[in-house]
Length: 125
Image (cartoon, rainbow, N blue to C red; front, top):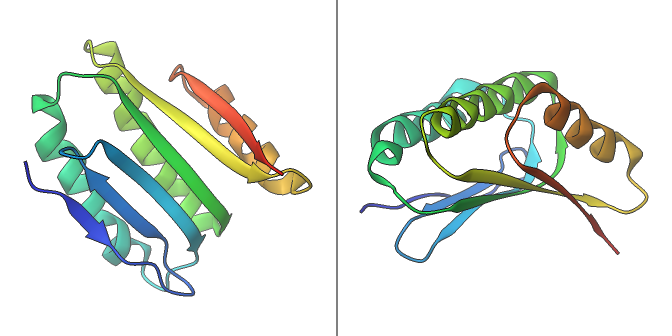
């Protein structure tokens, strides 16, 4: 199955969706000028590839900052995960945040409260 890899820039997150190596990761800053340009390929990949993935998948969210537009699209991604879990998939989220970054910790808790996806909060030391 094809992987999707988007390299990170100062304003755009790095995204790796690699079923062969079981790597599903979002990392860095998410402040894109055009959020759809960055995230539409991700949503299209999820919509196309996930119906054929039949094993447990853990998504690693190592985003250290995101803007409002990114929050909305991340919420849309989590909505898709929840729907897939409701249809029998086994998708979970690991939300990483710096130990002293209360904003990112609270953002993760807010996402976890919105969805029934298994959600693990992981502080970085």
